Structure formats: C-alpha cells, structure tokens
Image (cartoon, rainbow, N blue to C red; front, side):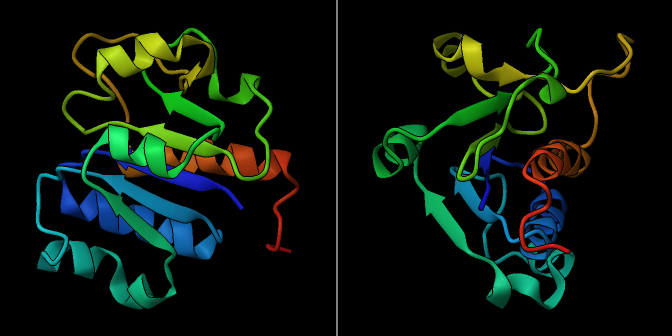
Amino acid sequence: MLNIVLHEPEIPQNTGNIARTCVITNTVLHVIGPTGFSMDEKHLKRAGLDYWNLLEFYYYDSYTQFVEKNPNSLIYYATTKATKAHSDVEYKDNAYIMFGKETAGIPREILEANKENCVRIPMLNIKEARSLNLSNSVAIVLYEALRQLNYPSMR
C-alpha cells in the first residue's frame, strides 16, 4: 500500500479529488496542517463525493508530528525544483509521496534535508506556467508508483 502526503494544502477541491484517487487506488492519505480550509468544508466533502468513509486518512498538526508518527519511512518529495524525474526512482511498497501546498510547494528546508528523495514531473519550462494542478500531479506520480508495483489489488 502506498501513502500520499499533502503538506499544508490550500484548496479543498484538490484535497477532495486526491481523497477520491486514494480510495480508488487503495492508497492512504496523510494531511499535514495547517490547511487553507476547514476539514469539514462543503467543497472538500463535495469533491470527495461519498468516498470519505472508504478512505484511510490521517491528519497531523505539523511536519514534525508527521515524521514522529511515521519513523523510518521512505518518503519521496515531489517538487518542481528536483532534477530527478518521478519515473527515475524505484518505488517500494509502503512508500510515502509528499506534495506541497498549491502556492509554494514543500518548504525549502524540508527539500534541502531530503535532496536524494526529491522527484519532479517533467514539464516545459515556461515562466508563466509554473506547475500542474496538485490533484493532477498526485495522480501522475501515484500511478507511476502503482505501475512499478504492478497495480497491487487493482486487477
């Protein structure tokens, strides 16, 4: 089973869409706060449809708390600042893939402390178009990891 980690997400619809993706792929969702919305917000619930009761979900007040509760975890950090493509790493079962907030990504100090595990989705370098939508990015990287693991429990 894989794990998706959202670090301080800001847009409830993205988090709701990611929750749906996690349910349909048997992936655990971890959210590190603070979030830019209430976890009870109607847009979050609507985007996740009626999948919330099917989701394995954990919430943490901080990155420090997340690391303390998940010691010795293999964590990949998705960022536009990485040099290694998301498809250039070998994902292991139980790996965690972290994504940052929509406006700023994962904090620089976290990325610098984990350079060897930073990955990016290849895209054109256009100044006006900084990155893909968060929920699209999660789906792209998650499905590459699932492909490498031969789509466990999904046949």
